Image (cartoon, rainbow, N blue to C red):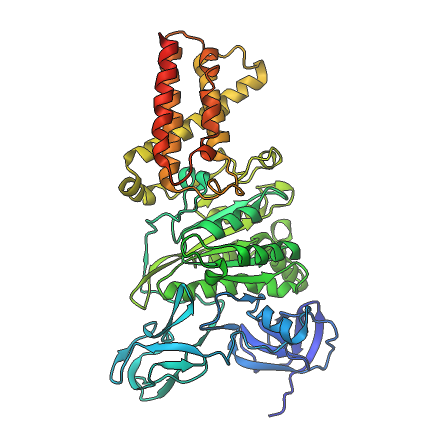
Amino acid sequence: MENNNVIYGINGPVVTVKDADCFEMMEMVFVGAQKLVGEVIGITDACTTIQVYEETTGLRPGDPVIGTGAPMNVTLGPGIIDNIFDGIERPLKKIEESAGAFISRGAAVSSLDEERRWNVTMKIKPGDRLSGGEIYATLPETPIIEHRVMLHPSLSGVIKSVKPDGAYRIRDTVATLEDEQGNLHELTLCQRWPIRTARPVKDRLTPTIPLITGQRIMDTLFPIAKGGTAAIPGGFGTGKTMNQHQLAKWCDADIIIYVGCGERGNEMSQVLNEFTELIDPKSNRPMTDRTVLIANTSNMPVAAREASIYTGITLAEYYRDMGYHVAMMADSTSRWAEALREISGRLEEMPAEEGFPAYLPSRLAEFYERGGRAAVLSGHEGSVTLIGAVSPQGADFSEPVTQNTKRFTRVFWALDKSLAYARHYPAINWIQSYSEYFNDLDPWFREHLGDDFIEYRNRISALLQEEASLMEIVKLIGSDVLPDDQKLVIETARVIRVGFLQQNAFHPDDTFVPPEKQKLMMKTILYLHQKAKEIVAREIPLSKIQALGLFDKLTKMKYDIPNSKLELFDTYLTEIDEKLAEIAR
């Protein structure tokens, strides 16, 4: 059939086609002789507007535009994990092998390896009734992740034939299914899914299990749930990317999806190098055996940056539907919002605050609402935890992306430039940050760590708040005029800040700290505070207690007590008792 749809106008990544009545909204199209991937984003009776996900240099009016009849979608199947994709799920390793270090435009490389054979175990037999989302085959995708092949959510029916267990490629037919209308469907190891449509679940569940990160300030003071949403806002150099690296390395999710959205190329290459060298502490296998990387660096086409977030969340939902707990890191949603702003400007839409489009809040809500813990169609339980970095210009948290992200996330880890410059990492400001998951997670903490964990956390928070108000007085009139009990609060808060909240990512025992050790560290600091408070109440000067060196010793206990020898905390409590008893006498 002759294609009469040709380019009428080009404005950066935005292309218009005149008098075309065959396109549908959000349809995936191929633009120009090189078949650049694009998506229909606007239709009027006069013209169709398309955003192109590749560099449009060299396109000209009169070049053909071909519709696919389907929305922008990705291929889901074995081979996703341990792979690196660009924003529209093109495999960068494969492209490098065929085209070299630079991606050629219109690179038509299959997302997943179609020639590789997988050892498939069939889970069905002829006559079985299957409904959408149920598992019909399994295969080892990596040594630690079992890939569960699911029926497309829109299909259901009776299995007519099943191939025996064996080695199959992703496009090979492994079974046939007859639907209610009597149509036969060939079942393969892969399926396609539109990236802007959330995958269905059976039931959404309350997030009641914490995502253990091993980072003390996150686990203790501002915890996030599996299936929760968090924002990490911070100015340049405050450690957003490093925090997300730490979370990706150490959090107890089954699978990590890391989306580098508009970040610098050297940061993404650092992620690639680190993750290939890192050994996963749970399985003693390379970290890449449970990681997917989506690299969309700042020099890649701006429209693909906008799509990369949706590609990442679609892959995350796919593994959630198998019954896995997935954590997705989006670094950074500000660059994604800037891509929205740039395309909106080219479409000549009415700008809202700071030039961002008026639909910025609804797009952010759309993204964060796709997180959550759910009972999935396969009969398992899975979750998608979303952690988005925000890069406000000039560290101004009142700008639109940060403010709107706050509306849709329940954890806010605010990074502080002054803490980062003082080499206090993670540079999370304990006064500005918050978590709204306490009510959901406290039953879990009580069951696994006891009531006293919650009591210690509340007392630590109260001491930090008290120190913040005392420091306002100190700034005005100096610390000498404070009574000893208030000086003690400042001294204890210093131990909490340096010994507990500050963490060393390069120390083998401090890079990941189990919750049990976190609890004992809090217990020891609060024990010293309470005992010292009793002595100060007897009008013995605080300087005598400080001279014992106990406060300084507690700042180093994170290094001195290995994670495997938690019984050593008892010797600290004994030493506190003995030394303070001498002063009291």
